[in-house]
Length: 309
Ligand code: NCD
Image (cartoon, rainbow, N blue to C red):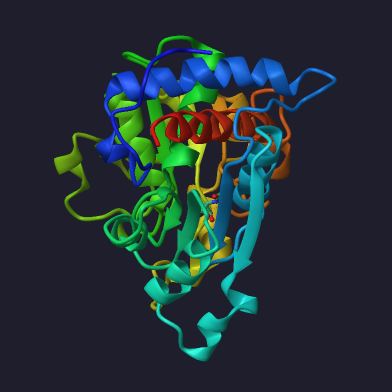
């Protein structure tokens, strides 16, 4: 394993990481990827460390991925989901977490619907905090696994052209991807309907396009996002059918391009809306590699933060 140290005790957002942190996480993840492809996938690195997974919002992939990563590092794991907890009885976030910590938890992985919830926690409790998605703000582990997967496919990302398609306005994956890819020197563009692109996003140094074909012709990688209907209290576009027609990525479009664009999606996929099945399942898609890399990248983050305790 790499001997370096992260510059931070928590992983709250990509914004707080420097490029050495990102490279250290990638080097460590490469080693762990080799470990999880062995017949015996477990290492003792986090023995005697207790990790609590606190999920105040739904999740399938991220939650399973963290739990697998923790177990493969031999951590003791406790799981909490707000749907079945005393949060429903009116307990505050700090009370819930303090009670859990009294049980001697060392690390907390938290997903929460409120932006900034993990930052708030990190100021009040002693455990290492990992943000597993806070509202529409950041989803740092997703961005790291996305960039790791891109780098595995394309090599150094400096100068590479990455376009993020879809609901940029409501997506924490978009913001974390933008920060991470820019730190690695990539050129980032966002593309979607004007109503789903934040007004001043160009101030982050990304280019903006409303034209899917032109953006697909421009990019090396298309990272395609889901419409976050659960975060939309008003109508941002006329209908799903119209969205699919004008902003969905389909096989005809893919096959008409001169270059082989790499297709990515953080999941969950809405097949036939932002992406058709034949694109999601095509040879150009690395969607399942993203999921595999997610475990290795999360192992790396847990391992490096634990070393910083
Ligand atoms: C994303 C999330 O929850 O932010 N999914 C994930 O973590 N794999 C994206 C989404 O919900 O669309």
